[in-house]
Image (cartoon, rainbow, N blue to C red; front, top):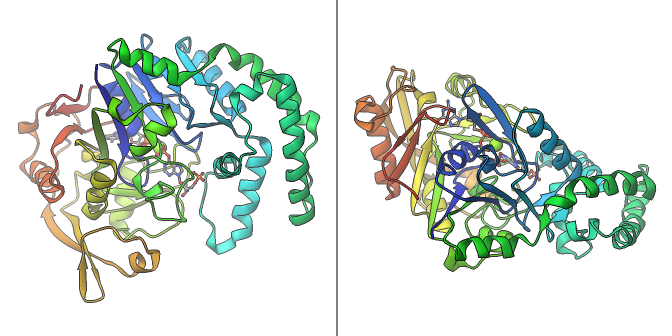
Length: 427
Ligand code: GDP
Ligand code: IMO
Ligand code: MG
């Protein structure tokens, strides 16, 4: 038995879906453990491109189980539409399992996400407006509605009524907008329940049983280390735990079931939404990376902010998730740049900071310390052997590995399943 966790080391969109899809070739069960349809994982198989939001990337392998764990927040409308869209593309979802303990995103969560962003004006977080934050809020204040509630009409109706009393008061009296009518939510939600009920089970039991039977488990993180509610650039974060610690809670397993944690490192840094970003490039190099790497959000289509690779961040991710190894993605995007920079530390006032700081004020005043390296011109997307990579590409990877004191197991040089170089096998 072995189990592997895939986590994003930066601000999301590192290529977790692409790496999960590759590792899933050897796994039996693929599990999402947090986040919701704020995630957008693009996976290319053959000449087809799939955009997954809630369903684990394992779904593209017909013989594997795909599990949506209890730590995920589920918008049933979005989930039903994702299932239908996959089926229309010829992908079977018969091996999908949904936790009965997962919390639901309700229509009022989406409205509250919109309003709270608009109210913040300049200080907005730049959320995906999918209702993820408000749904996790309700879970924490213990008024959330879970999948098991949705499957029991009486309980669901009672919980909906209770919530609407409070939510409508807030919407109407505080924000001055129209509240929700019970029936307008009840009817479509009961239809979603009919469509989803066949997939619902106690997924913690399923995952632990699979482990006992010696099955290989793969946990697919959404978002990234710096979007973690505790360890990220708070408050410019999401509302869940993308780091490896989130797996135990969000999948209902103990830490002793985790054997390896793979951090996905994009060969440069990107961020969607607001918040500090020390190595951001607001110049033509940033534009070059955005266009060549097609850095536009999978979920919202927003242009991603782009910048140099920051090893302060990668070392932080290694520490807080206990990474065993890393997978480097999108190395091909950097081809064509004459010079490349890697951030090795931050200069803050007259000090040098090596550990990622908590205070956004401090982070905002940090100046990245760079090492400059020569780039390469060649198109590397068809290379399949490490030694055939241009020397400067190898130097770049070796310097990353050295600065972070971690081995690289996988290098991705294109979005397709075949466009990878394996240095050490992960399963
Ligand atoms: P995720 O949210 O971490 O799964 O990442 P996204 O799917 O949001 O963003 C990564 C994007 O880069 C997707 O469009 C992938 O198809 C693409 N991608 C992944 N790995 C590579 C790579 O090595 N090279 C290139 N050119 N594209 C890649
Ligand atoms: P994947 O899984 C990148 C960002 C949003 C915003 C902040 C809070 O594709 O890597 P939220 O809607 O979660 O309340 O927004 O988090 N964000 C992501 N950024 N990739 C993601 O997911 C993200 N999910 C949320 O842009 O800054
Ligand atoms: Mg993404």
